Length: 300
Image (tube, rainbow, N blue to C red; front, side, top):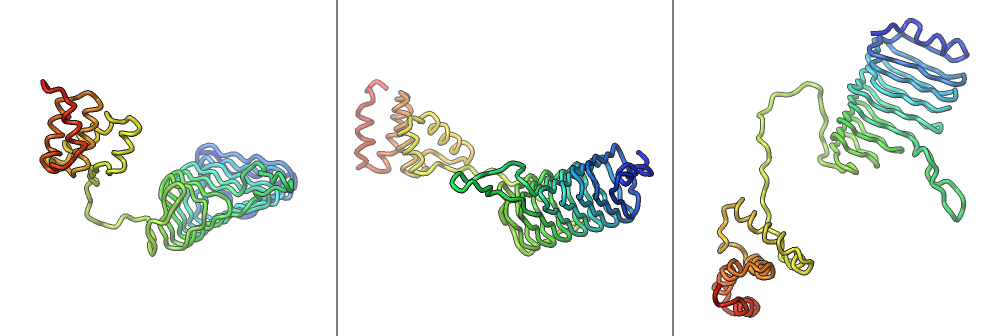
């Protein structure tokens, strides 16, 4: 634990402004700055844990509400703002980057863990006809009571609505309505009309979802044979039969035939003969199966 008594002294000595309360310091905390006219406002009962503040160029603003815990890197470029509302908790190292005069505004009662939020792409995308830059910075808003799961990334221009949840490791590229659960890369809506609370509510524990074996479609099997993936097709059918307890005779006709044909193409004539006999028994008019069976040496 380090003292906060002189944490802001250099910052204010050169013409920057600090208002409010000194935070409790845990771990290693640093404040790097260049320029003047920067503003830092800290509320009551704030904790910094391994926080690194970088205000690069002056005139940036950091506003932290009451009962907040911060953890990670806060980058604030000139004329840019990071604002964190009351009762928000950053559980693990996170990276908030406000650049190009844009702002990151985080509401009250939010919960983050190892998240990344940025307002800029940090490099220019240029239209080659007009010569104009076409990727301007955009601000980011996280409204009240939002839970961002482990390793979530929010890209520029998005708003996360009140009470919403973003699943771990998601990448959010579009705004999320209030009381909505999203997840994925890019994040998509999983369920609406939901919210969250920090306390675990008692609920019955469920088991793991079992794997549901699937048999490749007729089209997929046909394509596999055209591309020479006959051994893979044989493996897939064998695994389906094994994992489901299905008898080969119970498979759909197309699966039986493509399996038999794959065995034939692989030179497994005994297995091909047995499989073709099943196909022909089910469909005595199956000309291709009959022709393949006739090509198999009699001694097999």
